[in-house]
Image 1: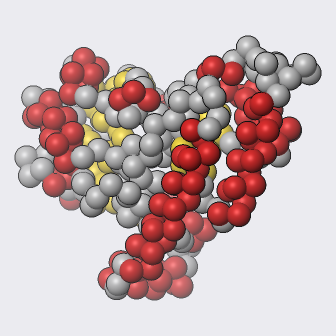
Image 2: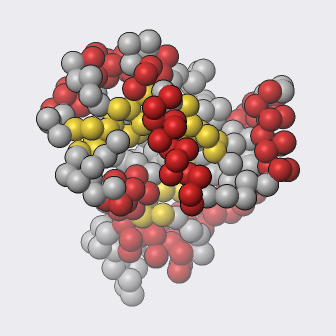
Length: 287
């Protein structure tokens, strides 16, 4: 879908490999900046402004890693109105967190019939069915795109083992109750994390509507120091927490948002509470 110099529009924040995949295809990344105030979601006006004659692909995720942002049907419809005017743009919709949604049912941009033939859905078993290490994914696309993907895939990927394939069939064709119970547990953890974060001064954190991360703006700590370490950016912030609180996080630069840091709540409640107790204590030392 992308040749030398073609443009791929990506809203920020985005999963870390999106921009690099575009570069591998020798395309040009065009970022649309979102903000915590927008819930890390773009609007139709921003999309329209980013489109040029060289735009070939729009790549996004909902629910989003790292922000947890989830586009509603109405929000997607407003973007569809823009895409109607630009029929040559293919929409790559990463829906790997489809089932981890705290605000309602999943809404796919492929549901709009006028767009369906140029939407490629990317999905897999890792998140919704907790099969992270099994490495099995799939796409849904029109026949031409699917056949082109098959040609490439057949030459460099092999070894999807039979056990994984059988497990995937069961996951996709039987009761979703185990997945829904998992999401209920994630909702409890999300609630706890948001309660703790509200107690920490200087952190701005939109409430994630899906996935299992928070992605707060921590820029108010830039320039602060504990007397030994000075926090100049998100990378320093993450390393400070790693070295001082022994808690791992991911700097926002990797996701296209240098003021933010990603924290996961895919852990036990006990470890989440302990981790955030340490984070709170470490940040209190910064002046």
